[in-house]
Image 1 (cartoon, one colour):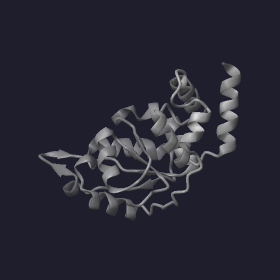
Image 2: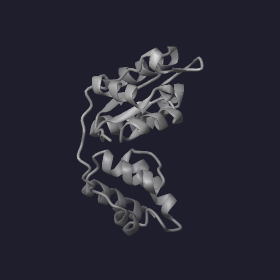
Image 3: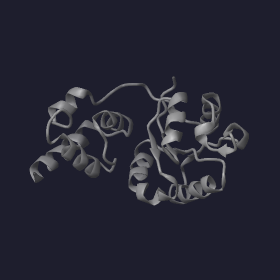
Length: 181
């Protein structure tokens, strides 16, 4: 399975499931027109890794794509055709098969990355980000400080490695969080 460098922006949870069947990538679901609530998280991904917009081939998907593209003009664009994304009269990325999703991403000229991991589970344990009574609070504060949003331990590890966050940036943020407690 190809690991994609860019963060893929989709509309919802079912889209994430469909894309993850096709490629290894970090995804952000904007939850329809709630896209503006996710702009900080998208900005972080855009600055560090780039983004690919993959919205539904319907009116709402076009509107959401327009909102994101206006804010992030260098975003790559991936498109699922209506006939590839239709099932029982419902149109959406969640209905596309993995081959159609891969084809759409290839046309967007995604970049692949090596699976080198900067952060490990041991790092999360060392900084009490998982396995401790205050881990959730620390992850919330870290997500806010780094601009990557709240995550459970597993998701945090993926985001730290995928968003291009350096160990130095991580350690500085954790030091500031610990000092503030």
